[in-house]
Image 1 (cartoon, rainbow, N blue to C red):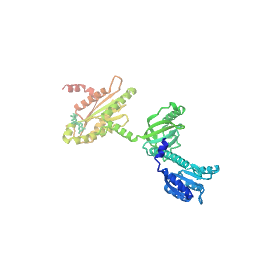
Image 2: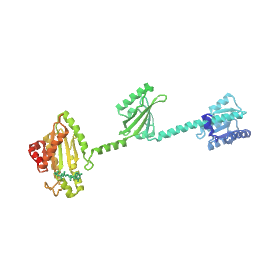
Image 3: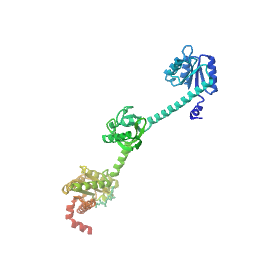
Image 4: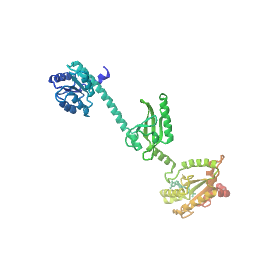
Length: 452
Ligand SMILES: Nc1nc2c(ncn2[C@@H]2O[C@H](COP(=O)(O)OP(=O)(O)OP(=O)(O)O)[C@@H](O)[C@H]2O)c(=O)[nH]1
């Protein structure tokens, strides 16, 4: 038993409409069809046949041609012109077996033509065959419908692209991702959606595949920026698969990664920012310094590092509480960061109450001047520090170091110099700026202090 008869075997309940004005014929055919296991409906006129067909949607109609009133041809014409009945297979039965009659029957859309007098086994065979064909074509339609449903409902955008870059088809998800109405993208070129370099790369790949489909390789998945209809850019993963369907075609699958990108960016930003003060953290500062250091080595420009430490901060915490200390650090951070104006300046929280600032292309004189401005700014905030022995307000001590980096130096040496200057500022009474120059002048003092 082949698969066709198998599928047919499951359709023993097929419904047959028998149309004939002769009661004997109707009776004989009905009995025959019932014996075959079919469900039967009968009509003795064309008008009645149309009514029944519209109501019960039979799987097949056996239709006599010569009938009073509406004949079989007209009945068939009307069946074929009505959406709900046009796909029902019709087999004509007639004593008129001339070629013209038979051809006229097929021209009206009949699937078969049986001559009268009927040979009953032949009728059974022809009915069976037509039901098998119908059952197979239904399966094809069901499959096509299933595929259509998947394509229309999938979350990924689907594009079918021709070798010259012309878009042949897009699914609703693709239209939605890119802001187009249904069918607006078909006919456009992918070059309208991508930046020119990327588009050219794809077109070259299409061209290579079209020239030698057998040697084609999968283009894989890559991240692309696609132009949305509103002019904005959307970040997508595009997977391209070449396919030969009568012509070289490329199936593109678009996966929106904008949200993924945004959270990736947010994570990246979070990894660079100090959670308490919202300015750069130590990690970000070190990376930034390394980059500026390399740049300064190439340009020969000076690089200045400013190190700041809040005075008597332990005392501040002990007096006003740790939460007040946190707020104070936020205020100090904002004040410091407001002095980093250029893209090559960066303020960061380097540790507990210690802050740093990098000023690229800034000589010692300017850096000390900037540091002095920051010190004054923080003092002017007039954050009360009741038990400070330095001032009634919160103050900072600042060390400044400037260097013209070269191969033999490293960033560590710049930090050591700035920290030394800071040490001198602390020991010199706090609330002041000291630079490497001033620090080295007081080196003896430092040495003496260190020895103590
Ligand atoms: N509130 C708060 N305090 C912090 C934070 N990080 C560090 N500290 C405190 O900062 C204080 C730093 O104290 P020290 O290093 O002794 O320095 P100091 O008291 O500022 O003294 P000098 O630097 O010599 O003027 C410590 O008490 C730390 O607990 C923070 O995130 N929040």
